Length: 319
Image 1 (spheres, rainbow, N blue to C red):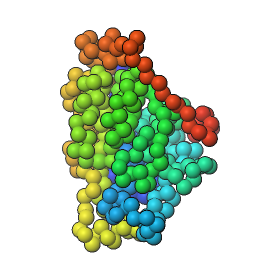
Image 2: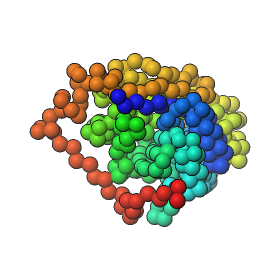
Image 3: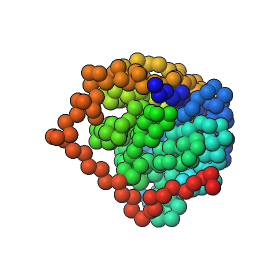
Image 4: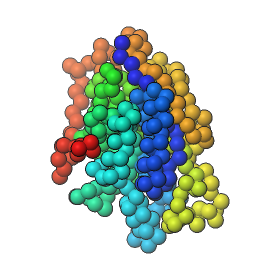
């Protein structure tokens, strides 16, 4: 039977600092390798930080000088898919034989250079970057700093005989997006969040039950001390006594809706579990949403996978 040793990383980024966050990521990869973890999942936009200030500072103020400066800092801290940060991370993944799902603020390299996407990057330890799924629809005030994504890489990828798919935050509630992954043979559903278990609103457990899949839910940690003091709104938050921003609360659920690994809110760490196919088979005896319980003669799902203006070939970070 196929199996995969999967880990989830509930860690603090160096918010807005690509170089320092890459070091945190590569250290986590090395720790995962020592523990025999074969695939490690990080939270939403762990590189280089969730835009937490928007909802707390009247981010919709039009042509506001301070909001413009904060956004400029945010864009500057974003990473490019073919850039040095992801090359370094991919090389660490290759050297330690650990594959990744990594949330990234992705900056356009040519067209859309002023735009940032909330992207979930899939890195195969041997092949490098195999996918970069841009969040289909930023949620509410996130639309002030993230562009809308697409379905070009709304796909599953195989690791050790199990097929993994992933979505970011509230796009996990988009039923068509989940169905697309189920129909692509998803065995493990990866859902990443900026932080705070409460914002998941039970979705990871629901996805495990609906899809009869393993579900890895990863929430991040963030405090004001993780944010550089030169960030535009740092002094405002400090004056208000803001400390904790995201508290984490990450969990792995089985296809039978059992908690098999969990991280306590507020605590940094990595936990893992050995995922197997036999548990999937047992759970799917009574219900398989894309298999024996599906009705393709009645329902059909069409997905537009176009990404305008860009090649369908990923740069190979391994040369």
